[in-house]
Length: 118
Image (cartoon, rainbow, N blue to C red; front, side, top):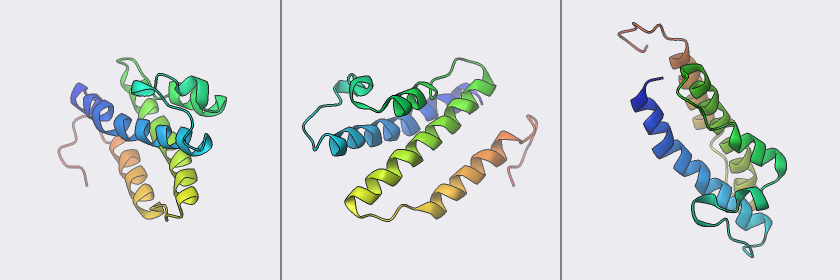
């Protein structure tokens, strides 16, 4: 995964993940605790397993570890989003989730010199 893709991951995917984790804290604390600016209090309010998964979403410049971090983000987002959707009575978009996951898995195994995606 190149620098541009990594930047996109940080801007778009992480932003949505942080929003979902903030909502998780809001729901679990009945909106009585703050996640803090930029998740300052995440470690304090998230379950240890969720915190551990969040830490796995950060990677260095290694392409393989960047992919691992992206898939960790997807896993964590899914886990928390399912809980939030259930709490508020929304349907979780399982089909969208499956299509995005399949697309990422497909892109991961593309040859570096691939000129077409599908």
